[in-house]
Length: 251
Image 1 (cartoon, one colour):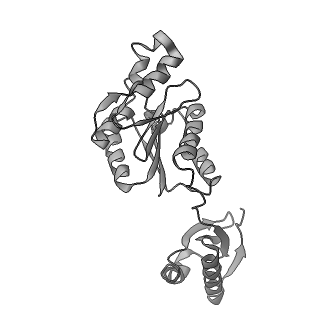
Image 2: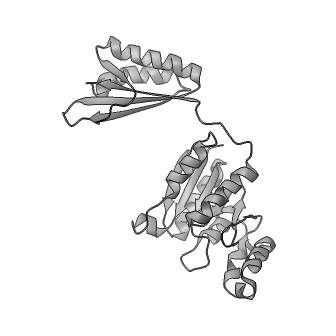
Image 3: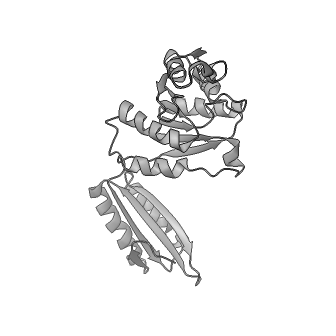
């Protein structure tokens, strides 16, 4: 099961607010031996939100969506989630109980609107103000506020996916080829990906301040496979008359 995130809000795309969810999710997943497969940032356009949710439902991925679950006119996520899943909106009794417990009579007539969720949803407890998020299939919808969203995400992982751990590649190796550009090693790289399809491979070219060209190679996968792949690639570079250096080269 791949894990992805949707970050919803015009304020992110316009630069008025800086996103903090991406870095936190990467770190939180790494602590469980997991990794993020993809990230999408979507503006407050209902048709576009629906489009992305339909696409991500079709993948079967585990998805965390941040933002847009309030009751103001620019909050569309709850309604869009229902449209994307082809289910009606319903007032969720558990969400009603949480909101009433927090706000009492002041829950009505406006705050209670946040208890209107797609049919079939289950709620995600909010430890800050008890206005819940919600889960629909493997999609989990959270507030945009980090102080609420991040513990709610942890709750989902602990409660819904307690055994989802340690799926990230177990070993990563990084080394830098010196004084060479990618075009001179393209044949070697093409042969590498055919020989080692299970090893995740990256090639990042650098142009140093002194004009020297370098390539940072990254290999990730099971330890035994990475060992052979690393030897093949480094030997191939040396056989072509180029040098390599273990680890990253800092400019």
